[in-house]
Image 1 (spheres, rainbow, N blue to C red):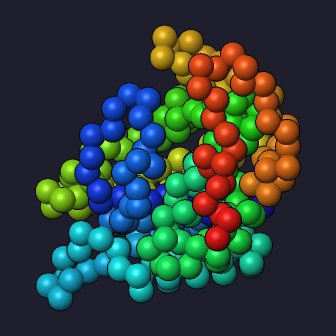
Image 2 (image 1 turned 180 degrees about the vertical axis):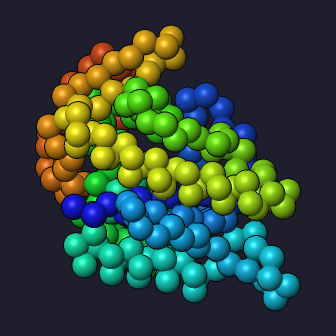
Length: 232
């Protein structure tokens, strides 16, 4: 199965407090996106001005091209994978492209290991924590909150390398999960935890699974937090 990882960075700057819902600051604009095909091409998706320099935001035209590309790759048999791609990446690609319906159709068929993890454990987990737990060599090059600041400061190359790295990391994690049949992550205290994950499953398959026990949580996270936007 050929894997295609994708990732976006937003251009919006805000101070997200611990425990605060990021959707409070939505809707979001996209600065740059990346796609990475396992043992294949890497592409950056951004909009340039008349001077050839990257614009602050991805234009609707380029967002539509990205959405069409993902759709075509998926229809040709490529397995799309993105960490939190259901809740975040495809939602905002669809928003910028002005086509949430197409984005939702693509989202149903993607592999989102983070959402699959959520449907087992009842809480989300970060890309970097899983990459470390799975022994992935690729590391995050900056914090997600820093990317919009760096983009606005004109450090476009650094942000482009960062988004390409995260797209590649999604593919590497998906490959490792398939090989090890588990997903592992490192908690804040540095200990490694893991749960069996016999295979990756599509978002559509995971949506039909019952919610796990969240009675121990002070604030339960509903499935709609990730998939509610698809009711378009």
